[in-house]
Length: 345
Image (cartoon, rainbow, N blue to C red; front, side, top):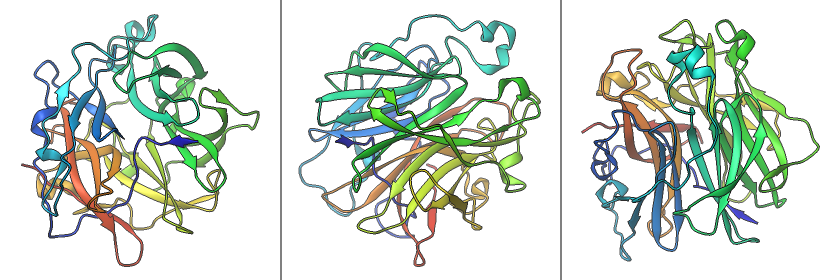
């Protein structure tokens, strides 16, 4: 049985604990761009794993106070960066010399960390050079090793453990490299036989870009013409519905935002909400928030509040990678819809 990286609910109310964004102690002067945060709670500590160097992953950790009242916010924590990277993938990435605009290093992106209770191991899922990999460790601070290939031409992995069935599912966004300039980036799921092994069932496409115009904004011709990425599957308490959350539009644009679909099973079918995107306001630039997306969620079991960790840009300039980690409180709306009021400053 697996404890996934974080739990999820959405919609920050107009009142309650407020966050300071970007989170001060998650800022790293070594990088002008930090994105795609994963959040894991273990032994009364929070661990945050972002994309930063594009060649390795570090972790930021903070002890949780034993007493947390209604005014507590994760942004109040003092996170400390690991002295060494928790994972440095091996090998190179020749495509960066062919298409430098894709990024740098080994294109090591979007970590997702999960704890497997059966083995007592931590597993980190990530993309390297536009392919998916997994590695393991006995500690949330690594080092992670025994790297194993999972999937060609895919990014943004997220592991979901269905408590009702005991099964695991890996969600990811596909990269259609031959059609990169004219194709789409869609979200797929595949069931798992073990933390590092897919089942024999074929992958299933759950959603694809089809909501105009927000999912189709991009800053460069090398980007897909429509983007759904950064998947996160959440199952409500009891018989609650399945929400497949995702990010849409180009991640280097201020149009980047979050949406969701409701799913009948972890393998679909799924139907997108007509209320997408779900930031409040729907045009977050009106609140000084630019390009919020690729989120993770942590539920504080002491207060019952849920917090969404995400990245947003420092500026409204499209084509500029200037993202940093933010956090805001969230809830469900009155009718079960997901909304995320976002803040800056």
